[in-house]
Image (tube, rainbow, N blue to C red; front, top):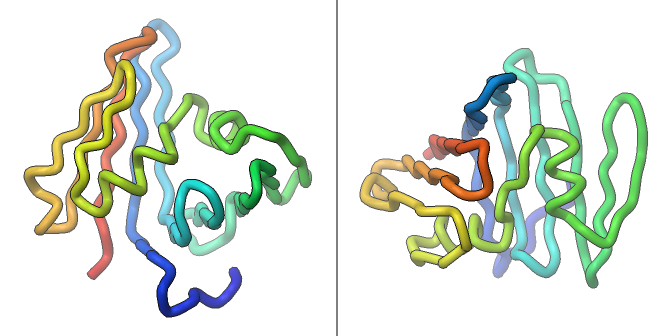
Length: 138
């Protein structure tokens, strides 16, 4: 992972994503997030410390590097969906982590425990419903 510039935002911790439905699925990993919605990086790390995936984006282009492959796309959200199994609103996530109630169609975020390092966001639309839980490392 690149060094974080002093003016660059950065967060780390654990994330868990639960998708409801007939084929209920879940994804969890440690994470390191830096930058902003326009330029940044997201490392997803297994509980044992191995890197599951590294996503980097800049200027409307995103790259996913995993043990299996390296892919590029114009859509960061699409690449992240390939890793986690569902779409996560990355642009809104940066706002939520800063305590800003960013509006995303179908999503609602509970920022009430952010001072304790916890964030929960629910997706009601489109179906299936999903819950994203984040616990930040202090």
